[in-house]
Image (tube, rainbow, N blue to C red; front, side, top):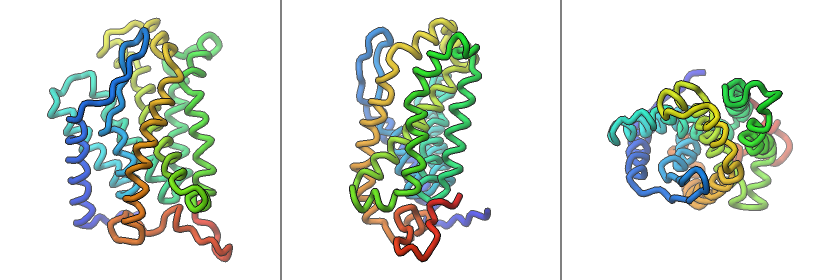
Length: 263
């Protein structure tokens, strides 16, 4: 597939990358968590969903990669942040793939990360550590189950319930971000080589608060919804979007095969 990149899209990529860096300078929302310290909601990370909506999966992912790489480079280039540079990229890619009717690819990308996690040291062998895999992946399985109705009924969902579509899509995108984070952290080079943690400590960290992660993604999804609803309403039908044809522009008259089932 040939992707034509316009000067406008290059400019938007640069602007969005700069926006990512600026938002990274805003202090994140910190949530105290017993036994593991604090967890943070980063405005820079969640904005990657908007990148996917406006620029599409590939250009949006490139903008997120540029933004996260520049942010990492300008904030000290510490090894602790390096493994997670790709997290917002996956957010933008999965969000864009679903919104621009390439949902099967988005489903596959998400599924590959989830399956790969099952082969990492913290959860192997599964016969002994399956409960750890369940603690980390239960909300990811729910997320995968959400992709299909989003793709097939996104148009009706948007018409009937307004912001619900963007809320759920924002949740899926931020869950992709979290899935990469979990996968990266489960690699020995990261948890032991960078963070100096032992395997037992990593397993405990994954079990410490399994329900807090999806709760944070719900908050992030709400923020995405608040931004996306007026923004996408304004940009609808304009040349500022990656493509005019999205899940929400699917024909409703039944004369055309729903584009949302195409991959």
